[in-house]
Structures are given as C-alpha cells and as structure tokens.
Length: 146
Image 1: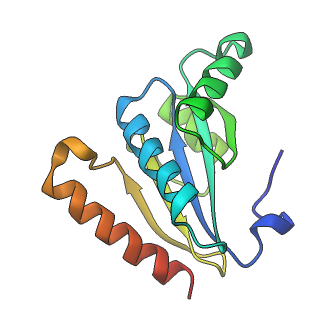
Image 2: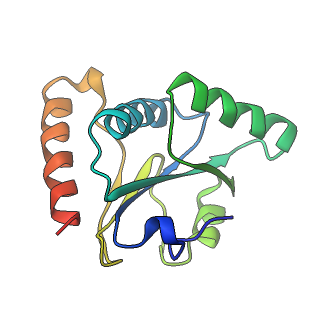
C-alpha cells in the first residue's frame, strides 16, 4: 500500500497513470512515461501507475504487471488497483465523478492540487499530435513543479 501522503511523495509533482495491461494506448503512454521518467524526470516528480484489469485473478494480474514493468523498464510503482470496469475505477478513486476511458492521467502539482486530468494518449502513430503532446507534457510538468 502506498499513499500520496507518504514521505517519498512530499513536495513532489505527481503523475497518476490509470491504465491496464490489456490497453494498447496505455502501452504507448507507458513507454513514453517510463522513457521520460528514466531519462529526463526531475527528482521532484513522481509517477504512480494504477493498473486496472479485466481479469481479476491475481495469478494472471501479478505476472502481467511484472511483464509490463520488465518490457518498459518501469522504475515507478505500478499498483494493481482493481477491475477495469469504469464504474469500479471510480469507486477506487472517489474524487473522480467518472472515468472516460483508458488511459487517464491525473496531474497533481507539488502542493497537492489536481491541475489536469487527461484521457487518451496521442502516441507515436499520431505524428504531429505526438510531437505537440511531448511539448505540452514538458510544459505541464514544469508548471506542476512551481
């Protein structure tokens, strides 16, 4: 169990990635976030992955998360958060009134305020949109750190 009130998250901007190992767009976002985190992320930014699955059997889920972590060299925590049914996701994140889809990313500034919630991901296949996303992401991260 981890909490945003844990010492390792104090005075940090936090990205919460709502994803599933079954979601292709989530894999694109995971690749981007892991590469960024491993090579560029400032020390005052943390990422937490919340993994929601269609198959709730931990004999399936735990190896799937380990494969994901290995595949993308993920150095931030990925937590099994529950069932991928959108109504179930909202139950685990009561501050949200709905979840529009996967992936959904919550951006929290270093003061603990949610600054943006973004659904979807403009991955590499979107060309110019992916380049624009990368620029907007870096600008958003800088604003979260202030």
